[in-house]
Image (cartoon, rainbow over all chains, first blue to last red; front, top):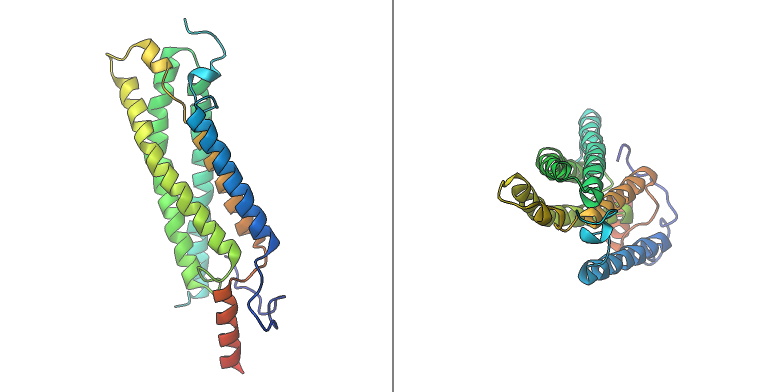
Length: 60
Length: 173
């Protein structure tokens, strides 16, 4: 936010509201996919969040 | 209300300091978390959990809130606005999400640190504590995405931003 947005953009002369940019859709899909994956891992209890599962050595 | 140029520079400096500091503090936490997750030595586990609590409360939480507040000031005090551009909206949502998860995680961290400092806790109890590595990695990824969005500022007006832009143009004409 070090400078104000430029006055001109591809959205300038549209008659209707601009469509949702493709990168926003990609970010949203990736975010929810990762959220779902992490949720499944945590609920299953077998992911990196499971302390015991990541033991490199057997407990002494 | 628009910020003057010197004020904008000041808030931007504070915002960058807090945001980058937040990422750095999470990276430091991640190292401790990884050590606590794979470590076997009980004294190392105790030290890691106690250090994780200190890093969380003395660095991550204050920097997260400072970054959020300075980001709001910059968004509302410049023409970028809070909901005019998609990159600002997504940065805001991800930051709020990261702070929410962080606040929930502080309970887990407090609990682990309390057990680590309790002399009655057995070694096995300490070794079997659930890790927070998923949250640490997820948090760092979210912060890096926000950082990239803030640096590249990809184009894309929201409906509100587009409407406000048209209103301002019609006033200027």
